[in-house]
Length: 138
Image 1 (cartoon, rainbow, N blue to C red):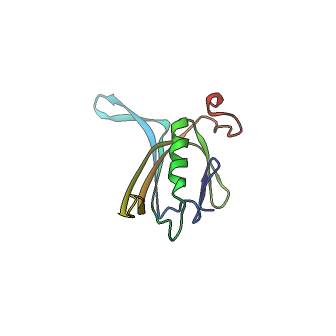
Image 2 (spheres, rainbow, N blue to C red):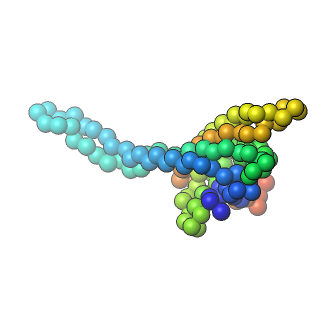
């Protein structure tokens, strides 16, 4: 297991990413002062985002249904628990966007290679209880 988002596990059989970018920000506010630099106050954490990028090549590794599964998770709109491959719980994350692009198509229009990019955003809400239907999770 490389990473799991809710019950979705990123791995060679499902969907392996080749690139992980994390961006973390902290909020600071400035208050103007006469004759001195602005006073700075730390307001707390800001945006924390992760972008996963990779290539799905079903003949080598990966399941084409994995991208559809992530898209369905994004449609639910709720936060999901994110756990890294070492078992560290990273908190609750929502899917902000999923981009995919196919190339090298078979005769029936199915791509032999699909590039994908998944953007996640950390939220302070509890993770979705995956045992409950999507309509009751909030």
